[in-house]
Image (cartoon, rainbow, N blue to C red; front, side, top):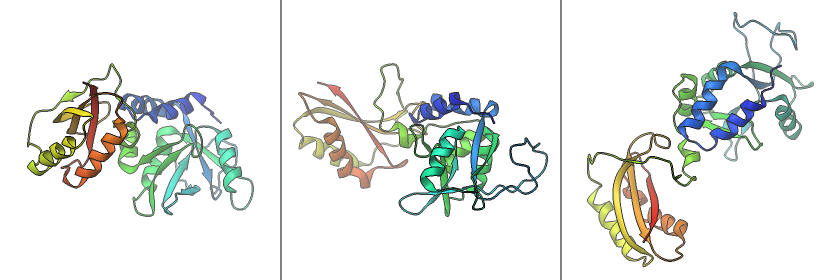
Length: 253
């Protein structure tokens, strides 16, 4: 069985969400295995022996449920991590010791993609419960399978801009809704720590799927920047146009 700790590191790196980190993981999939914990044994396949993928196999994996009861496909980068999760969750294969199926990474992701219907099975989790845990929605998984990875916006949103990142100011396009512009100005006016603001459309290819609105704020003193951003976003949330989110970035006055 191919246990690739380098793949584990790449999965953990992809948790940053940047396009380049997801692309590094995608590039490794054809040369690395991902492991599937089996709920049922694969018919006519001897355990522990390699099998050519030249016929249809029925693979029934274990699934993970989140706090809301939604299920996710579970894949792992090493047998050690599978064993830890199996012990914690009580996984077996047909009531006996847990069996594992190793597949080339891209094929394993393709199998997961076919199972994720966004209704009963909502996504994929790689290395569940470990430092490298990576949760992928269907569209994100599909982009990896087809070799055109996109930023994982749910992860990248919590990471500050780095000094070497290039954020492009997008073409003006449609102006922000007047009601949004007015509400932002009124909210900012109630926050003395903010000395100026600008609402622009931006696009960062490492972080973004499409251009979106960004609020640039200049602040003075030791302002609680997170609290300021949360207050403004909560105030204007219902007025933000597609794609439906507002970035808030800060500079010192």
